[in-house]
Length: 245
Ligand SMILES: NC(=O)c1ccc[n+]([C@@H]2O[C@H](COP(=O)([O-])OP(=O)(O)OC[C@H]3O[C@@H](n4cnc5c(N)ncnc54)[C@H](OP(=O)(O)O)[C@@H]3O)[C@@H](O)[C@H]2O)c1
Image (cartoon, rainbow, N blue to C red; front, side):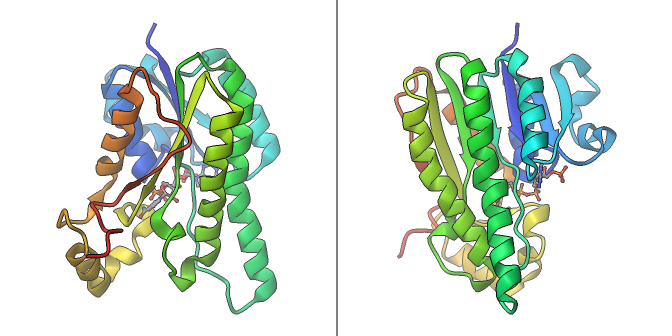
């Protein structure tokens, strides 16, 4: 039996790249997103090769009841890996304080709340030595005014990563990756800003912008780590862009 990996947010961008790599690495993959199944699975090259390896579960992780239903569906698969990549980065509503508060609550719930519910709900069904991997962001460490709520919600996720590492010890390793700017549908606006791209590239020691597969490669390296003696870590994957040089 192939080990099972569940990847939320794997209908697009970074989650999709992680899903592709897990499939190529011999995992049976359960893709989670909100879009219709046909659209979600057509993104996967392997879907045509072997449908048995690929399953789609449609769920809105902003909805606790739908998340609970998803957990019930996933438990019997006893996942070896859970990657939580689902996320959104809307334009901030700073001009309207009430809307700004609502946006913060909703993003905290989507990024951190669903991570908490999924991790606590699925952990009892996960094998010893399993990995839970969360997608954070370097937005937590620098101030971009339009990303106030997004950054705060990812900060909550970083704190949760450490707490879950202890709550789920010693059977499950809980870690997070914090990418910088990555070319995906989420960052389409930023990728239309030539001056920003020039600045990011110039300030990145590895000298280029990140693709979704750069992040997937890092996630796979962690998944392959066996035994894993690392938990509660938030690891930066930004080509060194965070280094002041
Ligand atoms: N791109 C970047 O520059 C960057 C940088 C740092 C961190 N990140 C983080 O990396 C993760 C992936 O981002 P990405 O750039 O790959 O974004 P993306 O291409 O926009 O993909 C976002 C994914 O999240 C899913 N999703 C969004 N809301 C959901 C909900 N309520 N319920 C279930 N699924 C939901 C989407 O699925 P459907 O569309 O099917 O609903 C999609 O699969 C996010 O957590 C993001 O914060 C991204």
